[in-house]
Length: 128
Length: 486
Image (tube, each protein chain N blue to C red):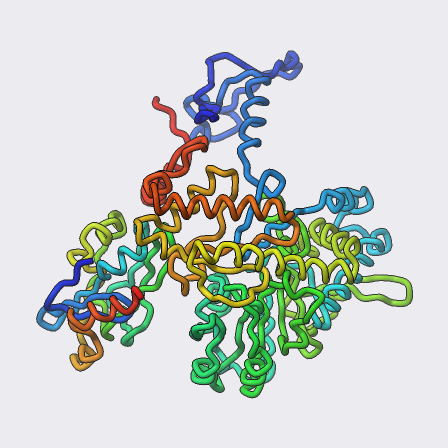
């Protein structure tokens, strides 16, 4: 299982990459492996605003339908619409396939997230 | 082994027909005079051209490819795939039922009304509720109806700010979906290590905003919620209502009653618990029952009795209205009515006892070979985890596919979500010990294969008409119909 350095992680297996003031959000390798082959995604509209940890989208795999939670609150700047036609990219390259870009409203919310090392330990515990 | 079959379109030979029409006595008309040109097609439709015998053979052969309870074991957890006795079909086909029309005068269909009235009473007796309405056409429809009743109740009592429905994380997906459809906010509550609702976690989410709690008991992992009385008190103290999802009534029927546990609203799945066909075998039926204080919100009409005469009562000003045309899937209600009468009070008890016995027998025999999610006495179903096998690269999906090779419908898999690699098994009461033993033997063989020759399981099924289907591509790029190459 791949865990990338230098980005943030959540307990619900999303990753967050911050560039300038924009938070790019996707799902981790652990998440895509647990979900199995992803066949459909539903993402929020540009301009919608969400609070931290709110469910903002849906990920459907051959196994189950799961919610996507937003790790940091703010306005949706963009949804990655390429994923509508190619949801399999979430399986193929989870860390390259960002799902939404959020205007980071409150930087302190990043403190609630895990580092790569913390996330690795968290996943180990989950496996047991 | 049977081969993959041509589509009927692919069997087509130009000019081959299965009919012969008499010479037309009417004068030919020019369609373009009658119908605007844009609605007319330029070419003939490409319908299959086959002989009558070819058509009959084609569809007869296809019909034998169904797997149903009549053809083999079907331990699909949470679905209660029990045998549907044929005598109930006979009863539902009596002319007095089939030859009546829903708009017929009440005086002419007194027998039908009497049946609905008695069914209401019997279901109330079994569940401890006060009144039932048979309109909802299936389980989720029953949930929607029940939640609409809860909403109407809070609204009329001036509690419109009660807008949260609490749902356990093990719940059927329809529960949160139905609550959202009715405009409630869904609040999830965690299960504890024993697979039951975590009381401490529940206390944290209950508030003056709580409109109600939706629960199945026994719950989705097949365990009885022992704290149900305390749970009910918690919700009621905040003015909330308790909704009982009747999906899992089978193992407690005739033993304990949801009404006595404190539930205010309930739906039943006649096509699970009360022996009527399930899924493609026929329409469902999801009657909704309520306690006295909620009767006035039930869908209308209700069947009432005046002296010796039955009639439809539409005079229910607080009713949420109709949720389906006429009176629900009446034929299904007839079958369930016949089922209840055939069993009687003692038989109903035996059903629940045997369903629990069968499930526990399977669980005890299989727990050595598969990880058991919750090792304690279960009710009608139990949840195994494929995590032992996963270490060898064999996933639960592979185990399910391998079962097809043995003519068994696989259990529910990857549900409930709170168990990793879940296999949810519900044998029901109608299986013999020989069938259960055969299933145990098969499951043990698959566990052994997973260890010794994992590829065999990973590549299953081997004996079916088609091998492993590419479900991901089927979902991503579905081909929903045949298209000609022209």
